[in-house]
Image 1 (cartoon, rainbow, N blue to C red):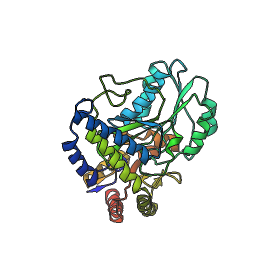
Image 2 (cartoon, helix red, strand yellow):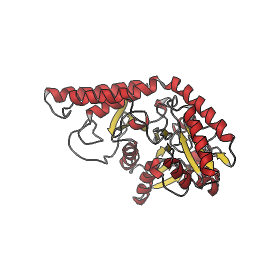
Image 3 (spheres, helix red, strand yellow):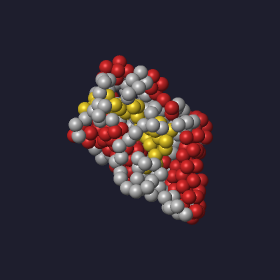
Image 4 (tube, rainbow, N blue to C red):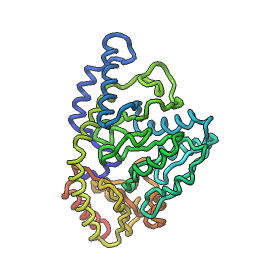
Length: 369
């Protein structure tokens, strides 16, 4: 079995998993309970938030725990839009957003909001002039992911932040799910960002929306007492601790892991470039963890299935949009339906070996011969 779908999810590290099992036995009390055991669990939540803010080098930010990045994106986008609807109902979004962001905006359009999609250049980078031209007095939110999950293209966060901060009435949100643990960022450049544990060798079922203190969000989930007023429900203390653990490990190992992934990326690109009828859709602006490639001799749906039958696991695109005949993101980036219908995403890890890449290439040759 060769796993090359790390951008869809990662296997939980043994360290995170072992600590999680221990924490389940120790911090099992409901943190909303007022007895001593509940108070102890509540303090572990507060400690986890401090650790997460420390990992991100942030001050004066709230950590709102969610079930994952999808819920965090929903809370950020819907929560902000509804909270500021009396100020304006205009939103701006990037052209290459995750389906959880796009779905939120489609929902808000049906609720009377207007949404503009910012243009991009040939490399997939945001057209800053177009972005500024879209801003009006009614604009309340701009949501642009720093790393695209399908191509790995990295936006210039500094330039985006500098532009948006010229308009202090606008909140800048970014889905950083594919960025956390992979690239160095100044997280204070955004007002709100989403991330999840299962992309950084943590556990599924826990993520967070990190936002500046003072930003008000309309609730999208209602209930009784909770750790954050914006998100009701009994906090999953062991899961939350595991998120802080996974994040610390990811941030501490970032530079070493970047070197390992870059080496594997270089090796993969060299091997792909030796093949015929192959077009690499990722570019110089893509982080090395994600390589999007079109194998022109076979449609992606069929090639994906053939790889899977042979125990090689890659992706047609994002896991949330898999199974489609073509990739809308690749078509939008390349203006080519052929490339969109034959594209696959190979996502790498510091665990990936050259032997696994060799097997990927040899298996491809077997499939198309």
